[in-house]
Image 1 (cartoon, helix red, strand yellow):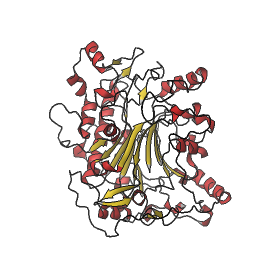
Image 2: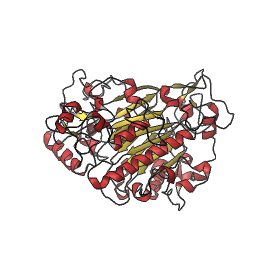
Image 3: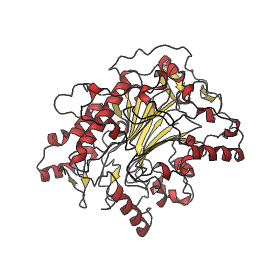
Image 4: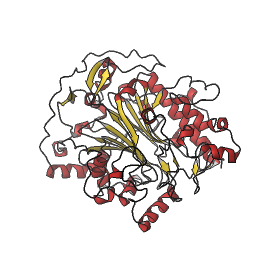
Amino acid sequence: MPRITTWNVNGIRNPFGYQPWREKRTFEAMFDILEADIVIFQETKIQRKDLKDDMVLIPGWDVYFSLPKYKKGYSGVVIYTRNATCCPIRAEEGIFGILCPPDSTTRFRDLPEEQQIGGYPTAEQLSSDIDEATLDSEGRCVILEFPAFVLIGTYSPANRDESRQEFRLGYLSALDARVRNLVAAGKQVILTGDLNVSRSEIDTINLSEQLRKEDMTMDDWMAVPSRRLFNQLLFEGQVHGDRDPGREQPVLWDICRCFHPDRKGMFTCWDTKRNTRPANNGARIDYLLCSAGIKDWFIDSNIQEGLHGSDHCPVYGTLGDTVKVDGQDVHTLDLLNPRGMVEGGKRSREWSPKDLLPMSAKLIPEFDRRRSIRDMFMKKPAAKAPEKMTLLEPPDTLAESKTEPDSASAPNHETLSARSDQDYTMMTPQASPAMYYPQQSPQPHFSPFVMAPHMPAAYYHPGSWAAPGFVPGAYMVDSAAEGQATDQDSNDHDDGVHDTEAGHSQVTSEGGVSLKEE
């Protein structure tokens, strides 16, 4: 069952100071503990020069970075994909499509249509004072397209001071427009990451009490521009007053909330300086959202509050092994790989370097050379393909999508088939024999209830805050090491529940929230 996991790690190496990550200190082991097939990290806080082999040349994984162009130790988003499970057909960086692929001077939005992901915000959808180049320069978004859906991994700006308010709203407006345009074009969308906004009262600690202290009403709090914009994007979002032009209809479901509609305390971010995590005084600002056509594809979604390593915790969503397309059961792996790679749930051909997209960090020259040399000495036999299940397969017919611009209809065979059958080979580098990449066997998923040695049960408990045998804070690193990590990271942290804004809660030492704007 393919799993998508998002996590604001507050520094890409930060988790390795905590259990269970510090046992092996490898990303490969981390991804297996997360049981993930697609991993989205926010706040990597590195630049191009800081990339190392262990971040890029992970056996069996591909990787796509968006790094800040100017600021150091700031922001950054990366998406890792497990080759045994999925392989994207297109990849882009940024919201607006104004950046260029590596080694190219042509912007993503100016590429031939069959090479674009599409859905780029138009001038009519954005205010005139939005600086597209600046918004896309901070390493805040990676977009991958699979035959089944477009995956957007993002890190939304925080409201650290008044000068960033317009920047933040500009980014959220552009993100809203990109998602709506993709859905209107007939594509399914998964939006995931740290959006730096709590959507409702249940997602913030002690809100009612603090509203009284701040002399605010619930309507005032819900009317904060960032929250109002976010809720207009969501089904079941609470929108006070008339909707904005162009946002008349919701387009995304909050998957984790769908599985836990009334659960309180389902927080994803805490103030580590004030040590509010043991008491669970936090906020939910990390999300996995999807368009209506693939909502029923998810069979589970939850937070993993027992996993430490950041001031945020991971959030995951799990897709079924088979999904309904046009009323037929289709293997999910068929829809997560290019046409002809997996058919009927059975691998027809192995992943190879020819499947790398220009955005892949493995093609950065210094890593490309070392990857080629390493692979010659690490050649492994191909993994045995799983037995074919007797389920219906997607047809090979090619037809245009019938999805209306504002509809939320489910995907059909024709649109998925067409999407995976596009001629995107012009974007694919050709590999020489020296670039042979070893065949990777599928990584086994860890059962949440089968523990590795020396790992407490709380690490693997996927749901309740009061996990069996779980003592809050008991499995964190020693106080000296923890203080060194969290204090340093928090100083650089662009946002957490300690940042003050009208649209974002500040968890205080008493567990309250400050709601005033800076």
